[in-house]
Image 1 (cartoon, rainbow, N blue to C red):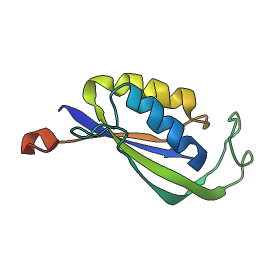
Image 2 (image 1 turned 90 degrees about the horizontal axis):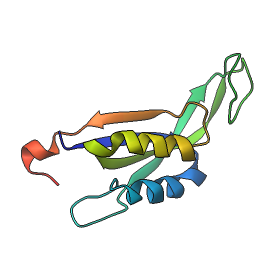
Image 3 (image 1 turned 120 degrees about the horizontal axis):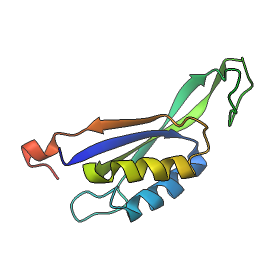
Image 4 (image 1 turned 180 degrees about the vertical axis):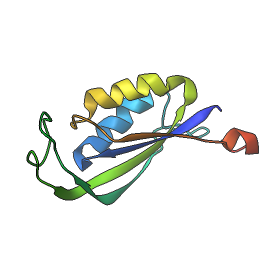
Length: 110
């Protein structure tokens, strides 16, 4: 496996800073294109538990809100650095990040 897809749930204001920082380490590339990403608005729920420090919401209350799902490709060998960068920029105490293996190289897809 050469690449993964990073799926990051984030407030809108953090999309561009994440794309810019991830692009600096070689993520967000497709062929001869850089800064490649997609994002879409999603609805989410969360309940901050005792001991948490929520970006939004109150302890022990179910919260609902809008955020964005940001998707970028990342070389497998850059994943650890990408996760560090995301956690440095992202405002959530526990950012929701999915690292999804891609099989594109098996089919010759860049």
